[in-house]
Image 1 (cartoon, one colour):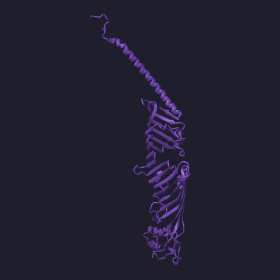
Image 2 (cartoon, rainbow, N blue to C red; image 1 turned 90 degrees about the horizontal axis):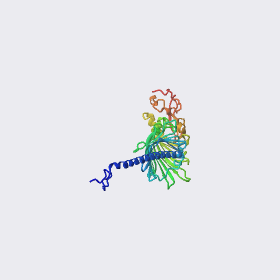
Image 3 (cartoon, helix red, strand yellow; image 1 turned 60 degrees about the horizontal axis):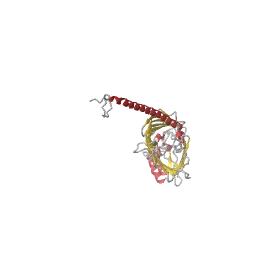
Image 4 (cartoon, helix red, strand yellow; image 1 turned 60 degrees about the vertical axis):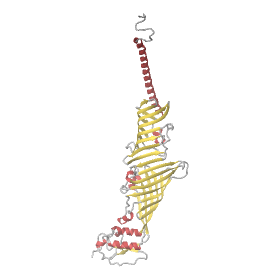
Length: 480
């Protein structure tokens, strides 16, 4: 039985007809759509405002940002694909970078948030280029105020290049850079263009730089800071480092130095703070492949072992002058002592050195006879010299040079008079073939003696070397 109510409605059933619900649902959809559009517009506005604010803040701090894309998350704010330039130069980061251009790009820079407060900073894929010569005397941390030290910073997969001269290519490349402020450690691979490659590690214990194979590096530089002792220690270990790898505008390698390989250690202690103590240290080096220009009769005497250098170092407070005392050069039978001074002059080092030392007369005679072992007369004289020669001669050497112009170095060498040698004539009946086998440079020093000259008695305590008959230009004594 019909109740007489409106169609589609059943009294007491509590059910609304489908047609009545459509307007209400449509209104809710319109409201949600309007809210979504409003939220999108707000995010777009906030996105643009926030990016502009970040760019303006960076500009006020001397860093120009371009092409950045802002990535907003629930717990982070990120910048992607940014390029940057320091204006007017790198002094905005450190006074050591004044007059050094700084620019590059960043793949992603992400600021983590804890609520609305910054929690951490992560930098990935930074590419930084430096152009110009830093002021090495300035501390690296003396620029604009650094970020909050409590804010953890992580750097990964980054790269840095250094170009000292705008007209020249880059000379230093740091790659695979990684840094953690929580562990206070920086690691990186590096390459000195056309010189070599190696590893860099910087941490609380100091700085370590290795050049070459990490397992057996050619160079290992370690710098340690000892706060309690208020001093820094610098050690440089070399393992058969070719000297030619150091060649550049500051060092010219001559033909005599090109085959030299360095082996040894240089150590220096540098006081910190207000200490009146001067930097000091020591060195011990072996110069493999260095050949002194000596007559072949002395090669066995001088070149039987590679030259060794040792001495004590004293440095000026500005580290631009090094004085070497107790300098010792040991090569074969020759040991020379003296001192040296190195001073920074422009882009090179000025070098002054003085050395002197004795050569035993017996050793000189043995070396000369060994160089002509097939000469019967030389062998006989050598046996005689070993019995009667005593004393020594003084060898003196001095050098004054500028490392970028080593070919113009001023070198002075001299040898004193000693060993009690006097000329003694030789019987003209000695075969010419035997005389020709004597050392020519020794013959050139002997005076002319007539064939009829008889041997004279020498002074007591002195031995005599023979003089040859005739000229030394081919008119030697005839063969029997």
